[in-house]
Amino acid sequence: MLSTESKLKSLYGHRYSIRRRENSDSRALFELFKQPLCQQGMICDAFASPAHFQSWIDNAGSDKLDIVATCETAVIGYAGIFSGRENRGHVGSLSLFVHDEFHSRGIGGLLMRGILAVADARPHLRRIELFVICDNHRAIDLYRRFGFEIEGRHDCFARRKHNFVDVYSMSRIAKSGGDC
Ligand SMILES: CC(C)(COP(=O)(O)OP(=O)(O)OC[C@H]1O[C@@H](n2cnc3c(N)ncnc32)[C@H](O)[C@@H]1OP(=O)(O)O)[C@@H](O)C(=O)NCCC(=O)NCCS
Image 1 (cartoon, protein in one colour):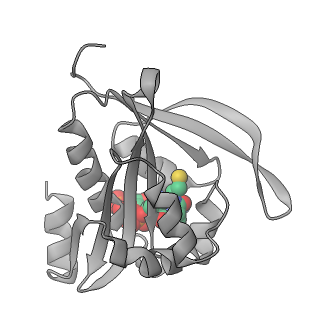
Image 2 (tube, protein in one colour; image 1 turned 90 degrees about the vertical axis):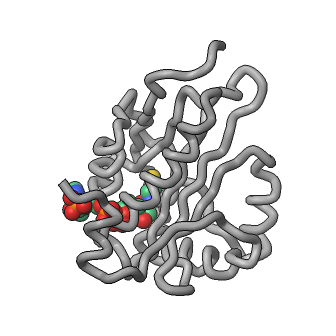
């Protein structure tokens, strides 16, 4: 079976790749998070400006892991894992977004593969967790393919425009890792 990277290369050439996020990506990421489908999948409040995103990311801790997907030079996707503190230092919280114009091309899979490879190289990160809106079937399907399981349903968890939304909590426990 072809890897996601090989499938992408055969379908779209060598245009898509992943790299570490840089501060100079903030404007492109702000524009990405503003996309309607990205907004629909978001549980937290939208960012007001590139500077707002930059300050949020600066405050997310120095041990965060984050990468972007690019199409030639344009930033078209983002994946981040944010570590918990103290007695939740073994837990990472996952965030994943692909620009609306690039959905269903395997880029979410490419980002998942990349960010989980980085996380798995940090044996203290035993648990990766996330919240996903229950109607976000594309995301749920993708997370399941990467070993995440639904742990619970949280009704009226957040507000999206004028409605409350229900979310699932999902997690993936590393098969091996450091002691507690
Ligand atoms: C969820 C998201 C990251 C997935 O990214 P993507 O690049 O579209 O993902 P991929 O193309 O790698 O994989 C999507 C898979 O879902 C499948 N899929 C598409 N629509 C689907 C649907 N309605 N239900 C179930 N599966 C679906 C596709 O067939 C594809 O599988 P395949 O690779 O076997 O063809 C992207 O849609 C996104 O950014 N959405 C908006 C933001 C968001 O909701 N983020 C998640 C917050 S928890």
